[in-house]
Length: 263
Ligand code: MLT
Image 1 (cartoon, rainbow, N blue to C red):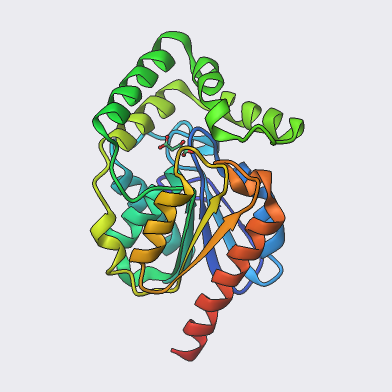
Image 2: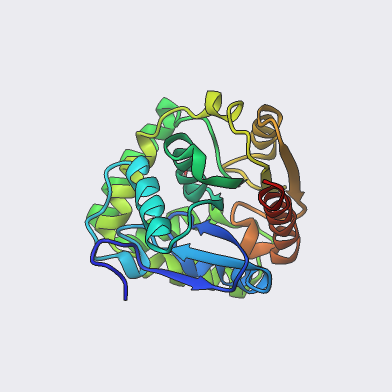
C-alpha cells in the first residue's frame, strides 16, 4: 500500500538500491530498459514526480527542492537509508537538489544529460513561452515543440513515437509547474566539488540541451566522477542508446555498492 503522500513508484529487484529520476515532460516509464538491466543485481526504485505519470493528481511542486524531498520521503517509506541517485535532465536537476538537501543519503550520484548551471536570461524567457504554450494550447503542442531537441536525428521511429506518447500523456498543470521550477532552479556548480560519493556523468554525444562540453566541465568539478559520452545519442541518451547507457550506470552502481560494502 502506498501512503497518501508518497510518490507513485515501481520497486524491483534486490541489492544495493538505485533510484532513477525521470526527465521532462516524461515519467518513470522512460526508464524501462534501465530497470530491466539493473534489477538483476540492484533494488531499482523509479518514482513519478508530483504532477507526472501516476503521480499526476498530486499537487504539483513549486520547486525542484520539494521534488527532491519527495524522493527522500519515498526512500524513507521504503526503508532505504542510502541509495545511488541517478537523474536525467530535469531528473538530474532534482538529483543535484537531493545531493544538496540530503547529502548523507547518497551512495552514488549519476548525472545524465543535465546541467549544474541555472537557466540563462534567454532560457528563462523560453520557459515562460513554454508555460504560455502549454496553458493556451495544451501538452501536445509543448511536446511537439520540444521533440527535435529531446532526440537526435538518428533516433529510431519507435523511440520518437514512445517519447511523443509519454509526453502527451502528461498533464498541463504538472508540466507548467515543472517548467517554472526548472526556470527558478539555483546554480549548483559550486556544489559539485563537495560531492564525495562515487559519481558518473553520462551524456549523448549529440545532446544540444546539455552539451558534452558542459558535461565535461561538470565531470571535471566532481571529485570522483567517471565520464561517459554515449556516441550518436541525443538528449534522451538512455532511450536512444540503452546498451551504452546501461553499461555506464552499472559501472556507477558497482562502484557505489563496493564502497558501501567496505563501510
Ligand atoms: C528534460 O529533458 O528534462 C528537459 O529538457 C530539461 C530542460 O528543459 O532543462
